[in-house]
Image (cartoon, rainbow, N blue to C red; front, top):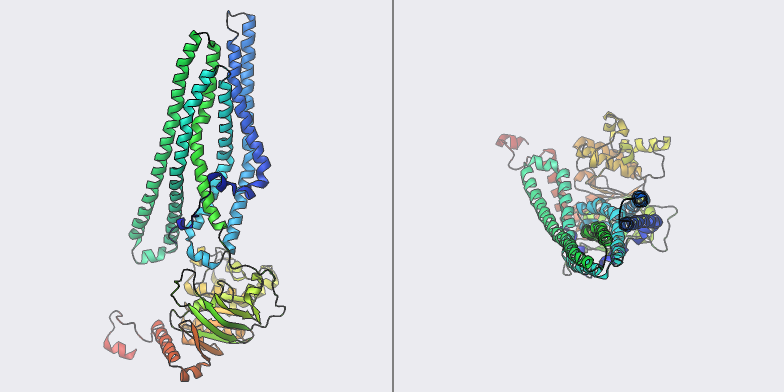
Length: 623
């Protein structure tokens, strides 16, 4: 997907309702968060008490005698004590909040990662990795900061403004009314601000996700970009996306600046009107100088809470958008789940059956034919079946069905007579292992990569060592002993520090080490040279002697491994039999095999590629 904006709900929730969805994650931390909020409120109340103390000091006006000096000293000590108390409350707020907010972040991040692991491959087909990464890191981090800082201060500052406004009325109703009335435009402006800023912050966070995707793609494809000299092209594309994000951020800044203008302007107007009204009231005997001084001291205390509302309000909207983006993943329906009443296979034999299996992708048009259109195929226990067909016939898609990377959309797949959808996923994937043409390895040691499918093993135990060595021998991966730390060598991201053939051999060793009853191989030897391929195939014959195997074949040598061959044509199995039989009886099979042989000849150099540099006629004849 180019952006996650298509995931926005058609009927968006209100901001409080959207943020309320965080409750399950926040609930364990609520007691300490409440303690932090009460500490912050206590600090605010203490600050509001200082103007009242100052008023009492000024009320002791008159000649400087011992009584007045005593009142001033005690008043100063009281203000100092209040200041210390406020500082202690601020420290307590931070102490209460720091740990629980990080725990909320931890729970959200681990739950989101767990959710991503459980969601089907179809979900990951639709979502850009950069969008997922930005939600995992940026959005959850923003939610944590808002819970620890923004939420607490927003609630406390609003309560402070309300309490302070009520206290302003204790000196004179007119001054309090002026302060209250001049604050009303701020709330109206805030309501309008929410509508505009909410759209901008959503756009900004989606664009940041797209930018992260571009960075990831360019890093993973750096060899291609360098080989074709397209680094400048990638930079131009990236700069365009970065400029779009910058423009959105500027729009956000202008929106916040507009709100800040009102937040700065209205208190100044309130101060000016209050000052004129206060002077008039003093002249009329309505209030004293000490009371007017205390009023302005109180208004000054309220100034920061009022001015902070704009920042805290925009912070809340950022957190709301981040919450929406995270919960788009949480709300995704997982269609590949364990059955409610699971069936268990106690002693698996390895019989794999496709029974009228159909499959079509979710975004396929209603008029399009199913990609797999009624597959009927039986693999007997211990049998090796090669699957051949032209490009686009559905071979790779078929290999994803036994392990439920995708579920059939019609018909069923049976393992030992049990529908694979009736088996627990962990058990199913213990019985069936896969090796893909595009070998993916992880940033871990070779030992950890190869034994990935043997969670029950102690990786460093004698048994773990035995399984590891057997798998590496079968995959002809002896090159690992030449690496700096042998099997303890940590390979780079996705194994890019290794050659394609080395990655494929380690991926094949991983599948073999899982010791499955059914092995599904999607052309796992495509990157190997001819000699290494022959050695691997010879070793595989030993493994496949008592293992059921479905092998997607893209070269004639792979077909030679099989007991029987299945021909896939336009989503249907049109012929099954021994290689020699199909050569005699199926014209399409002969066409497919001849195509494989031609590709193999070009790959090995037996036939030169048309247009090869400086090839003479004599050289072509000799070839």
